Structure formats: C-alpha cells, structure tokens
Length: 390
Image (cartoon, rainbow, N blue to C red; front, side):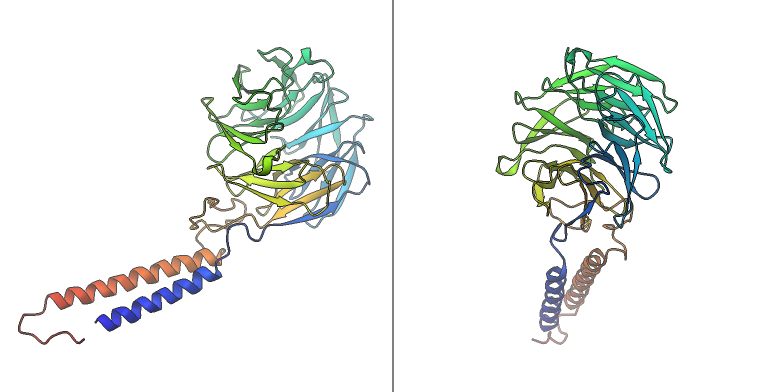
C-alpha cells in the first residue's frame, strides 16, 4: 500500500509539473498590431466599438470619421463642417456612432453607412462623450476657450440638448464615462472628480493629491470608477460613495486616457512613455511598449474578440492589443473572469489550458480518494489478519 501510494504521488506530481510547465504566464502573449489610417497626418483621437463588427475613430486633422475592419481596412467619411475638431466618439443607444466637435461646439452622429448629422449649440468646446444609462448621450463641455462656460451636456437620440452647470466655477471637465451605478462620471481641471445623475444633479469629490491634472476616466469591473492623474504619475479609483484610493505608476510615468477592458482590468495609454497598460482591481499595473516610437497614444477602448484598440495621434495609426485573456482558474493577481465576447477564459473547451488544469485537479482528487479508501480498508482488518505488505 505504501509503495502504491508513493507511486501514485509521484505520478500525480509529474502530471501537474508537466501541466503547469505548459500553462502560460498571465498576459505573456500580449501583442500590438498597428494599422495606418488612409490619410497621412490625419491624427486619430477618439475610438469606439461599433455595432457593425468594426471600430470607429475620429480624425482630428483630416476632419473625418473613420471605420476600420478587424483586418485593418480603413474607410473615411468627411464631416460636413470644416475644421470641426472631432475628438471623442462613442456607440449610441440608437445604433449610430456619436461624436463631439470641439472647434464648432457641435455634437455629431454617423450611421453605419457613413451618413453624418450634426447638432450645433452643444456648448463651448465639447471634448469627450459617453452613452448614459438613461438612453441619452452625455458629454463634457470643456470650455477651454472660456472656462466660465464649463458644463456637462446631454443630448437625446433625437438631438435635444440640455446643459447642466457644475458647482465649481470654471471646472473645465474633460473625460467622461458612465459608471456601473448608472451615473455619469467626469474629470475636472479643478482637481475634482464629478458625478452627475440622470436627473442632472452634480456631486464633486476632491482628489487627495493636489494639482494632479486629471485626465482619463473609465468604469471598472469592480464597481468603482478609475481615473488617471496626468501630472503626478498616479492612477486613482473612486467608489460610488466617493472614497478615493491612489496607486503609483511604475517609473514615475504618467497615464492618460482610459478604457474598460473585456478582461476585467482597466486599460490606459501613456502618451509620453509610448505605452499601453492595464491596472487590476487590486492596483497591480502592467505595461506594454508600442512598436512605433513617439506615437502619442490617446483614446483606448474595448473591441471585438477580447481585444483593445487605441488611437495614435502622431503616427496616424490605430493600434490593436491582442492576447489579453488568461485562465479564470489562475491565482495570479491579474486573473479575470474571461472575455464576455468569446467566452475565452471560462472553464470550457475553448480554453485548453483551463480545461487541462481542471482535469489535473480532478486527477489529484481521485488519487487522494483512492489512497483514503486503501487506508480505511487497512484499519478495518481484524487484528489476527495478515499484515500489510511492506
């Protein structure tokens, strides 16, 4: 019995050793592919996932809205108003893409076939835009040309615009995102994080680190909202109740735009360091170099098939990040619940490593059960019975 148990233990250990040797480390396979825009010098800025299986992005300098297929084929659609300064873009509740024009104080929408409609009177210098939980579009009126006009704007799918005042004067809101709590959250130049309810009530929270130069903001899978501090090399998170925690960036680098990833992490761009990265719900940060130098990455967002996409302003390219997901059974601090688009990362046959690990656990449990049965059988033998073999 002892020899059998020893042989079983060695066999199980050997199986597990092989399995864990085959299992990849978290995010070891991350790679970045870059696709050039059609127009050189177009300066991509915002980017969003469309309803048509493609990614859509704004081209600030070229005055276009562009569409890119998963294989990298780009189609551009001109914005009717010249020099519009298109920046933020988001998928709307009506199946169209909505964007803001900071130079013309306008909100625009574009259909999947490329038809553009513009709605003027959106406030001074609208900058970023998000789809709210109430079925409307919300955007930050940055008002950098006249900060006294700082507002949060709301536009219905029908084009009706409402502007809401922010308690702090000249707040200069910039990035904006819809939180898991159904409210819309935004960053302010006054070192505050703002929250506005669907009814238009605004609450502000001061960030602990002064003069942090708040930049990007995005909801996390943990129920909190995450933001970047562009001057203090920190990333912060704020709970729905307004409690703020800050995390230091590696090497004193600054993060900029943010986007919620399909892997359970929040992704960000680093314009100066030429990187993209992510932060886990526990505050663990990983970074990845962008192949083209001085690309100046800006907006980043989740795309199809568990990938992230980002805009490269200086090089007029769009980047795709692949290899994000990891097995759900991993104990690494970066572990996730899997990709909601593909199911990869769930314990099924679409993830062979996760399936192997589950099989290994089953083998180990069965081995322990066999050993326990043998030992139990041994102790039930009568005292005058034959002894156990040695």
